[in-house]
Length: 385
Image: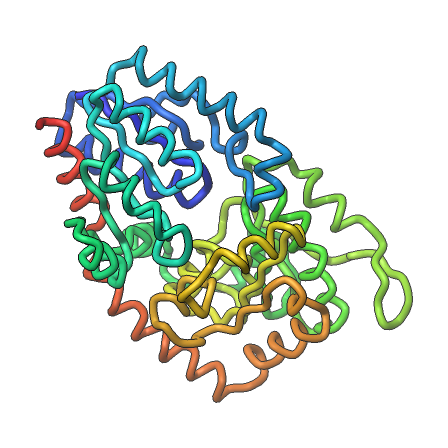
């Protein structure tokens, strides 16, 4: 059968690639095409558009790149009609994918949505569109099924696919010295910096993270980079003079490790993490963290106005409905607050122990794994109908 898959960022690419692998185990003749990233390509999908050309964060940022967004949407729609898939699989990315779902439904193409848009947080009115255009919805958070039940839509709770990814890809907690030797790190404990996987995130979040280097000289700061973004994007911050309490200095001694997020987190004393899937990955690996988010002021104000009924933005806090990790959002994401919170997760043993205990409870709430296998069954059955 022919499966057209659309994912629009790093986490979507990861989950889509694992779904493709699971489908292929059950359907040896499966063909895959769509939009996504290197992981999807490695799993055997032919890509029309790479997600690095699709992932825009924030209202203002999408508006600025509206021409590219609409162009990608037009190309995707035309490609779907030309390829004639048995089923369309949409992975997160609601601003783009819900429009693709509407188009597919108009052309009598089966639509399966994997990883529900966060309509429980904002744009609850989208439930009507989802009920109209989506044949099968799969959710990965426990409370999402309750939300859909209340709105009269039967959905599939498959558990969180990160359980599969982390348990499979995380090596045994590596010998720290070996990890340091391979990556040419200093013989100090590590603070991991995860500034996100999109250009806008790097530009908005990484500079503030780097302010901690001078304030915590006893640690080695390591930036987690991704291969699909240009090295120059990181270098412009790592090689630029910055103002410190002791004058102007260069960001010397900072090392980047590329595409080694799990290994880095497994060997880190603590982490500063951009809000997103990485916050849940960090929790699953058991590394104390501070979560941060920053964007354009306009996008922040719009989001603040639209989002209702939730108290958190990070996945660990949302799932537990409690402040498991500290969130520093927009104006709270400043040097003084970040320093204070980083000290709490590196020096306060009681605070560290409490966070790790909540991580353990979080893990048990996410299901028993096999999300990709369960999702594959739903997709294949939909394709056969």
